[in-house]
Image (cartoon, rainbow, N blue to C red):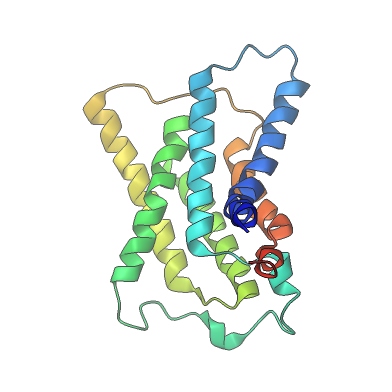
Length: 206
């Protein structure tokens, strides 16, 4: 029983990290002439992936096994297109706070995200994908979440800009593994969870 509980607790991070590690292995192996990647650069990459794991774990995205468990996927009553309909601002602020590290880490690590528009576009794509995947496990997909997540990423970008001016030190500029490394990590982690994370399997034994 304890072994199953341990495997269950490790299953989600495994599904997030495995596709990203395969991505890294492919690009590092493909470019045999690439200089040795500094350990510090890899640590920042792993920190970014760990952040993605925390977001995915918190938001509770649906999986393929969830989608196969219900007779219908799209349920209008679980889609909210009216922002702030419940009058609660606390949850919206928490959603914004959750995406602020994304807005900070993207420009801090990768040079191509040192303008606000790429950061906002990727944040919108990430948040929208989460909202769509939440349709599979009977959670409410809310336009308010999308708005506040995007706002949080933009605020995180502004914090990075302010930090740059205060510290007056260049951010990390790691050599990207592929043209869209950060984007690949986001959607590979979501795909890994969607296709590989079968939490219902563990419930049969726990």
